[in-house]
Each structure stands twice: as C-alpha cells, then as structure tokens.
Image 1 (tube, rainbow, N blue to C red):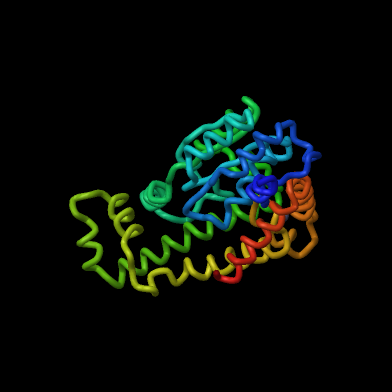
Image 2: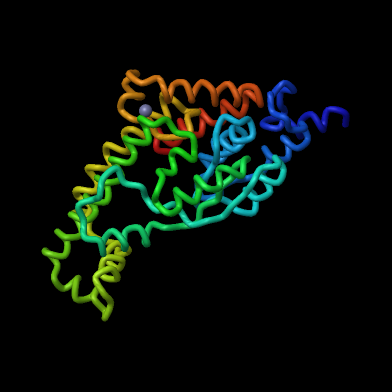
Length: 277
Ligand SMILES: [Zn+2]
C-alpha cells in the first residue's frame, strides 16, 4: 500500500521542489490536474505552461478561445491571478484591408467568440480593453515579440482580403446564391450568410494560398520553438531575429523547473499535431 500514492502522483504532478514559483506544491498539483481545453487537447499542457508564465512574471496575460471556462477560472483562483471573460479582440490591422466596410463588419462579427483571460496585474486590464476595441494588437498584451506581431498583423490583412476576393468571385459566378443570401437583409447580412455557408472548394482558392503560408509558419514554429507562446515571423524562423528563440528558451526553462514531464508533454503534443495525428 505504501507504493500506491507514489503511483497515483506519477506524471505531471510529480514536480521538482525548486520550480521557482511562489506557489505551494499542493496547489500546483491541483492546477496541473485541470483541463484547460476539451476542444484542443493538444494545447492543454502548453496552456498550463503559459498560465504559469503569467504567474512567474514572464508573460503579461494569457488568453484562450474555446477553453474550459470553469477550469480556467479555477486555475486563476488557485494561482491567485485575475480572470476575465470577454469576446475576442477586434482585429488590429497593420493597414486598412481593401474590402467593403460591410464585409469587414460581417467578417469580424462571424469570427467573434468567447475569450478567457488570465493575468496578474490590474494595469493589464487597460491593455486588454485597448485590444478588445481594436486600438492595440492583442500580441502586446500576450507578451509576443514585436517582429512576430507585425508579421501576424500583415497576414491578418491578407487573410481578410483573400476571403473577400473569394466571396466576390463566388457571388459573380453564382448570382442565385446572392438572391438566396439576401432574404430581406442588408449587405452585411448577405456577407454573414455567405461566410457561414459551406461552399465548394474553389470558393476558398485565394484564402487557401494565404493559409498555406500561415500554416507553414505554425508548423515550423512548433518544430523549432515548441515552448514559444506565439507563431514566429520569418526573421525568427530564419534565425535573423533571436526574439522567439529567447522566449522559447525562457518558457522551456520554466517548464523544466516545474516538471520535465510538462516539457516532454508539450513537445509530444505539438509533434503529434504537426504529424497530422
Ligand atoms: Zn519574430
């Protein structure tokens, strides 16, 4: 019977004592048992590391969409951090996308969902508000490097423009679809309908090209910098910028100090993801 508790606590909850966080071991054990997301289990271990990075003062705030909100709220309580539930931030664009304003409104509305935030300092709240209203890229609130934030901003513009071009092509080729979509609504409602509609593959032709590039960055980031909290820009992936490498090292060290198994789990989960499992 004496060996039983050991076996039970094997794995993630068997931590090193010098984890460097001002959190009692028993609390950390409870935290590591939580499930931050059911929809994206591959990111659960990584989410936990990022929340602990907030606690360690490495990261200003953590944010996740489609998370397990009750578990995330409990995580914040356990670690004595602040918790907030909002809608996703209004996208910050590096330049005004060349699309109709009604389309942009529809696009933002369609992709808006619930976002949970965990942060430690009250001053972060004004940054979150700025991100929610589209005055600040949320990357700054989440502690991402500027080079990678700029890359993401530009890609967000390209993404919106590519979807708009695809929708316009679809409308010109399928006039009847437009009549179906009208249903007494205005232009914004038509775009919302078309953005929600499942459509033939050609519909996403230009959008897909933009996504190939973004997905390539995501996969390369997961392979090269599995602990980094963001998707790396070209400079970081080519090694010209050291920003992502620096963050990756910092997060990896934190994970190893908490429990080497947490680090292993992150690498394994992301490996499974990039291998298409
Ligand atoms: Zn970068």
